[in-house]
Amino acid sequence: QVQLVESGGGLVQAGGSLRLSCAASGRTFRNYALGWFRQAPGKEREFVATIKWSGDSTYYADAVKGRFTISRDNAKNTQYLQMNSLKPEDTAVYYCAAGRSSGLVQKSHEYDYWGHGTQVTVSS
Image (tube, rainbow, N blue to C red; front, side):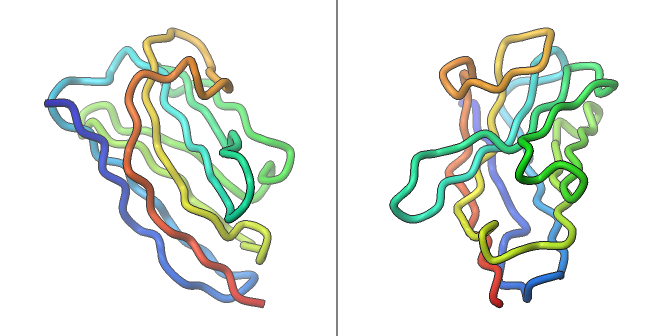
């Protein structure tokens, strides 16, 4: 059974940092594109960041560019999202995802596996 499990969420003050992790089990995602999405209350799920299977190319939503960094460790079957300079508008449930693509993937429907999400709350 394939599982993606996020961890690292929590409550942080504006300007603070958090590091999210997403551990995969049940299969290797070495050749998969990986990504992070988020969903705030009353809003649709939105793209945050994606990383190519090789780890040498990334792409970010404008709202997080320069503050968030996506990375992956294929040996550990794990991806990360380092979030710095957090703002109250970053408050959301964050989801990790994996998709059968050799490139960068921004569209949620192109992902095949999803985690259950981790809550990130940024206080002002």
